[in-house]
Image (spheres, rainbow, N blue to C red):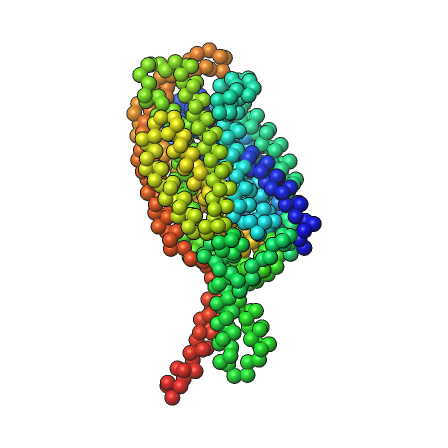
Length: 541
């Protein structure tokens, strides 16, 4: 079942991009941070970071729920439900101003972080799980494309949020595209909620699973006999990562059966079929690939090594991405001696900070495509090591990148590597554990990303070394100038910690090996024992 379905593959990708661009606005939290602190000045650095931490964590754990439901009911229904919940969460977040400072934080966490995170998680898994089923021939590239929109979302929505909050033109790369009225920080939540609800629900209508047994035209799935997995798929991108090991199991089964008296060719054939793992043909499945259930995957030591490396990369990346705007504002304001900082100068700094968020979003998206494609040629393992080393080295030098071009270069390279993590780990999950349970299996691995979402911004806040406040001028809701305070400080310890995490993850990646189905391990042990038992019996006699 091939060619006449191939034209539908790109429709699914289009739906995936529409959804992911909207969901990717989760990375623009740093644009909200300074305006929210102006409204609630008693909030600490740790408190203002809490919604950003929790929305990532809830999102990641909601992927498990969304994956389980979409595996059973399909991506369209789950994607639609996710869009509705996300939109509702942001629209309710617009009511935060009606509460006192203490209650406002709880309300913002409950709406923006919890409801928003659930909606994002349920909608996020649908394009990823669907696209890997339609593209078994380009798994690394297509997972990169499927999540590229998620990384690019902040490119469009960070400048939009900044313009709505403070009033002014919607700008991309310093080019004014159209003017926007000042909505303030809370009404901006409402506007974004309506946009996200509409876009995600519409994009979900384009998602559908391929027919059972689907195989792209012109592509011949690799047999287990021709697999040359390097631990993360073959170099042509079509490997499963299981071919060699499963063949070894079947081969041992064949050879050891020959030692058994009375074994017929039919007996051998049946035993090979039983002992070579759980093989099946189903939606998006390559022939001869082993499917791991979630429970089997969790019993694999490889899964936990993957989880730890994903945690390290997510912690390091999100530490910078979720703090990109205030980091640049701190760098810039620390170099200004005039007090209070004039409105025009601070507005320029805030605009540059929002632009930094937008630029790193582009590199975040590009990394998902670039590294996914590279991994199809270079191999997943080598590509992961390269990304971890590059990200770690840049983090070691980020504190010295205090001119705007250098800062953009630094955060862009970090975002480029971070985007690659989000592309490679879904592909690795499919390579290692099959696609039958990809929704739940990747959801379980994705909890590492959620944990990193908690740790990254938290470590940045805890390791932030306060250097006192600086007064600056800003426009209030009525359009008049008011003086506010920005908390200066240093993030150097946080950058160093994140860099060490990346290099440690590179070292752990060296130890990764393709998992082996438990059935195969038992089969190999049993047949090896059977092969040697006659010799042991002879020696005893």
